[in-house]
Image: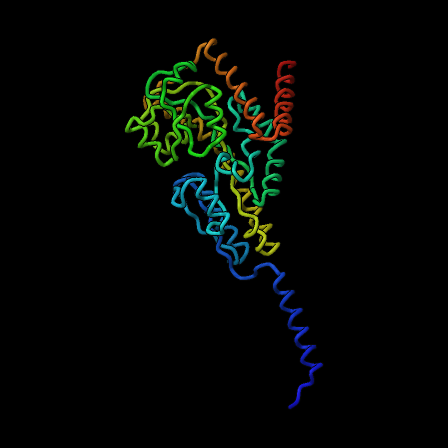
Length: 343
């Protein structure tokens, strides 16, 4: 049988068009998304991740599944972010400091002594959380929300209340966390950078003798076994986020993207909702474990506040976070404080 050249050309065109159309369609086969976290198995984070990951699998009829890597088995935040960029991981639960390299403004709430209490945090977050998620998307990541960990307090092996006393301590700072390093520099404290995985050994060997940590972190990582004193000074507000790299998320079918977003946003809200209760319980537990809480004097507190103000100013001058977004935060705080003082 002889096939005309025109018929061959028409068939080739149809085949080519079909290939182009299929190539533009979202991935339809089953996808297994790899998500890493520092949170250990059995933690609140892992419970909500597994619960909502299972819900995604059920709602997509098995088309989207998750493989979770808990307990830091994929490395620290820096290593995890690198693996997300090359496609070895698709998403992670990260600290704000861990995402700074990709999106500096995500560390907005992490400025030293920015907040005076939980009510101020709630007031600011209800306005600015969505802006931070939008900024994350502009930087090629899909964020599903922020989850509180709690205030970090100075914890030491010897009684410490003043800035001068803290300068005599061997203070840990997270490795590659530029914001924390600059904040300590403003307090004229020379910290010792270490990965989180090395902190316990550092306390045990005397390489460091002080940390700034939320109570829940100190308990979970066993740091509380190596310190005897804590200062009633909310130095930093610590929080995390659940995010995916933009490319693997967008390769999902549109209806599956909606389902993943819905379930992961619910997971973050669940983690955020229980964080404050867990924070308070862990703080009480530290006292029962023999940790002695010390309150700074009015003079000592005034010095901490003065130097924290200076630290924030220097961070803004160095473009650590955008001046515009920081000013919006300050305006919201002033609005809240003015409302409280007038009431």
